Amino acid sequence: MKVAIPITTETEISAHFGRSPAFLVFALEDGQILGREVRPNDQAGPGPEPAPAHGQAHAHAHDHSRFVQLLRDCQAVVGRGMGAGARQSLEAEGIAVRVLSAPCSPEEAALLFARGRLEVDAGPTCGGSST
Image 1 (cartoon, rainbow, N blue to C red):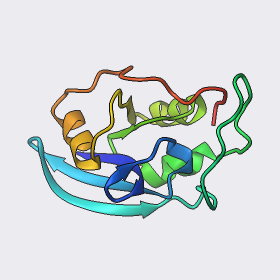
Image 2 (cartoon, rainbow, N blue to C red; image 1 turned 60 degrees about the vertical axis):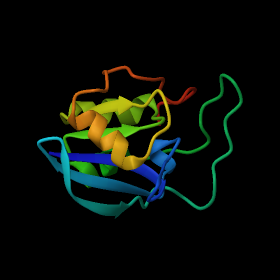
Image 3 (cartoon, rainbow, N blue to C red; image 1 turned 120 degrees about the horizontal axis):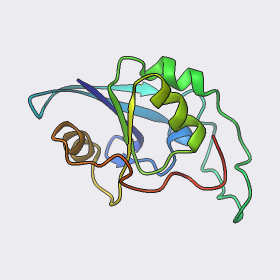
């Protein structure tokens, strides 16, 4: 099984799926990590994104089909935040989505999913947008 983690660095999970500079993809079997691969996110854009004001949409747009194409061979994406549009696009392609309720390392996140320890709605998605 492959699990994708949106990352800011190889040791830090990104708070926003679509703005993460890369995805760390783990190959797992029997609850153990067998390998890892970094896949750049060409939709991340430069620098950190300012948070939208309450009730405002994000000031950017993503091509969700490109995320699906990039992560098509993954069975799941585990992160700290994701807009509804990205989540719906991934789930429509059969890719499970989990949002962490507490910070952890990318490795821990992948193992939590592989071991069945993350619930479907383990946390909120990004507010204010469908991107």
